Image (cartoon, rainbow over the protein chains, first blue to last red):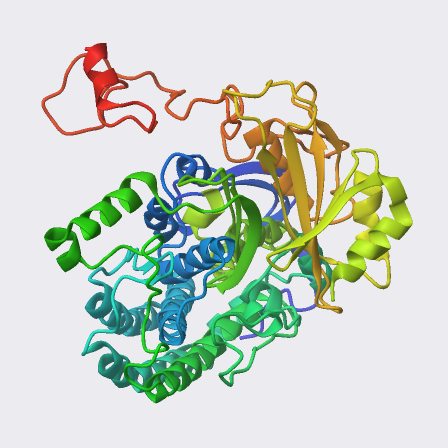
Length: 410
Length: 196
């Protein structure tokens, strides 16, 4: 049957509307429980908005000035709770830079492997949650299945599923367990399969494509000027990735590519994340191979340095020798004596450039710990993505920004 | 390699560049308050610097309340980090403002990203950025008094919007104000015993 209003222009059908103010969040499921948006609506179009973070502010930076350098690690876990190991690595490297120490080669590769596993879990979470918020529940469950395998591997290694606090100033808590590497080897091909399944479910779905393509567009130059990073920046076509631009750990020895988008829309951010999972798998595979080439018993074959002024002694020594007890006591009570100075150390976190700006005045307590949480910058950029769009498009757009309340509000 | 920016800055601004240093691979230049905005614009637009990517802007409170005067002239050190996507170099530009009247021109017209970072520095340290289009608190709430990351703000001072409940409860937390562990490390067990 032909519609009766075929010859009418679409604009003639618009109902007259008055501007309306709408509060969205902070206790709105699509705002992930922590962000409030005050929207000015003209019909269903968002004519202006104010994004208000801060509902998850926990005084991270103030707390860091109260304890020892090592006591910051549990806080860094909670900055980005879907990729805590990347935060551990970022902070540990910043303190090591101030101390002027370098972790042995095996420890570096170990950090790369665990970090990339975390990155995969971060991207899987973001993409699956975004799809779910658009009503696609199956990909959510399937991708969560893959994240579960990653968390099982992390649990095998670190003993914790979510907040690992695994890395230390000067290395890691333990060397790789006997089961860890085989377990990672086993899950990598399975993750690839699940990612392909997730893509097959979504990328031929007309509704999903219409809701994401051309929606929530971020301008390239604006993204650069705003300091957006990670998949949000790369989706606009800028190939900035700290792992490539200023390689740290062993990233310059492995072969991987930096996926970039073209349009800077929700779809491109989504696809960048999926492609980065594939690249992370490549990095992990190559890093495991490099790790196995390290001759057993060589100086490289250790995950931590052995300087007793920085690294805790083994528990067997603490309980059986007086030197070990004193060493342990001094490090726990007074902390690592970090020389005065200031450093900005940046790594590629799950959402982009994760920077730690540390100021030390000597002694066991930081003077200032500033974290450049990439989510804070991405959230600032989300205003220009949402403005001028439809109210309903806020949900996929906000989902694709992957705002993590912990590092955004600190 | 990126010492180039420091050299360019010194050549352009002369005495307004108070000190330059390179430590841990970071290039740092300290400029006067008057040159702050001009230096920021210069490192962004100069073809050899071209630091178009905004990395971070924040503040450090350099005052130790036990030793220094709270109104000291160089109390707050505001820094901005910018990166060049083309030349792949970055620089940290710093300036110092006084504790008595911490004001500084805004950089929002140079990098759009400075908007929220300046709001945060204002919220946490009370540095006022003159010319900022919307200088409101960003992480704390409007009713909050003081600036929490200043060194003279006590870490265990609470400002609840809803008053603490009175009386005792037989359940686990939320704790009343004087219960639980203090946030402040300097409080020893003896202090707490004395209080009760």
